[in-house]
Figure 1 (cartoon, rainbow, N blue to C red):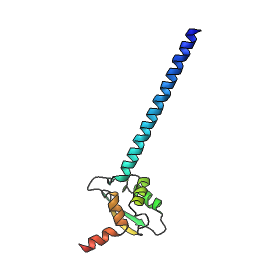
Figure 2 (cartoon, one colour):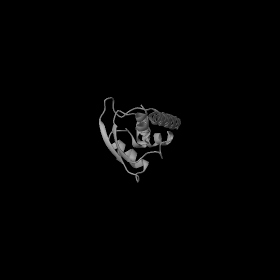
Figure 3 (cartoon, rainbow, N blue to C red):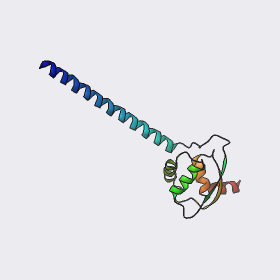
Figure 4 (spheres, rainbow, N blue to C red):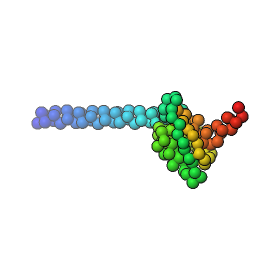
Length: 128
């Protein structure tokens, strides 16, 4: 009887340890994912290194920001459409994107893409 109690105690101890390890690993992985996602949002890293590739993009007035972000991801201009949508919102460009035809480069960082699509980069070029 004592052997059974000892084995049961050891089994429960191992089960508790296993559950605790799983919880710790889960919290670690969740933290790692949250950090990576947050870092991706605040960094201004281009999809490709310089010189990149020029891509023609046409925005229409009926396109949503989700459709625009997905188009940019398909063209290789941004790495992740969802992250680009969050960047648009945080940089207050969400409602400023202008319809039109653009030639964008895959080495342009997201902030520069937003400026061009909002019509701000063209104004700066004209002033110079």
